Amino acid sequence: MPTIYANSEDGTILSLDTSGWSGARDATSGDIDYSTNTSFINAVMARKARGTRYFVNRAFFSFNTSGISVTPSEATLKIYGLTNNTADFFVVKANYGGTLEVADIDAIVGWSNSGVDNEGNVTKYSSEITSWSTSGYNDITLNSTALSDMSSLDDFQVCLIESTHDLRNVAPTAAPRIGMYFADQSSTSKDPYIDYTEGEEEEESVTSNSVFFGTNF
Image 1: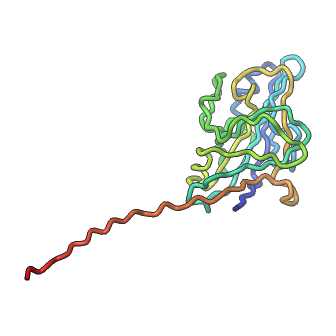
Image 2: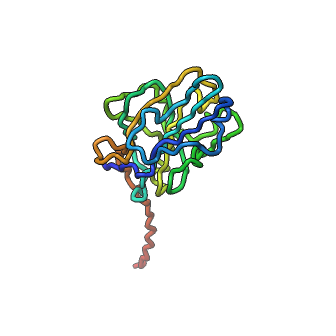
Image 3: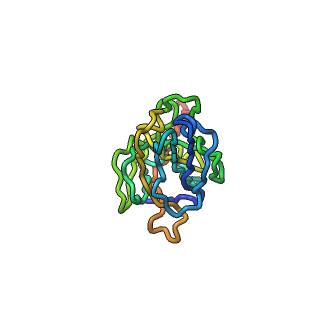
């Protein structure tokens, strides 16, 4: 089973606003770039702090899939958890170019910053994840849309987005969050990666029309 490790351009982008939920959630640029972190305890989060202060954290990952030309038959995204485990989330399609930076807080394919429920706008790569281990790898099954994109894209990029509040635009009253490790770890022992099963190439159907010439005797 082949393995693809995440590129170093992964991490979390944080958006915060002191005046209300929409300012943090619908921002077109984040406030802090955690793309060089080896890990982060609040990698995916939708948080209400004191008063009208809100935080939104989204985690992004990039994988080099240029060597995959045939759609895999199955694939599993594996992320090593850390500390917090209270947020539900989806893996969705992202597109943030070669370098992850604060401007990529909304680099989610189909995303709208117009204060709407984006569940029907984004491209989901997984079912909703509702449990999270903080002491080992979490296995996330990627769906058929993700499998197709793994073979058609050279740079397969995903975002992990909190689903109950951030994706659906429901202001939180607490601080659901999960922690995880990133590719900047000094070894690969806790790095994010994808395991996949190679698909089979379809054999071309060739019909040979033979013409026989006979001689009448």
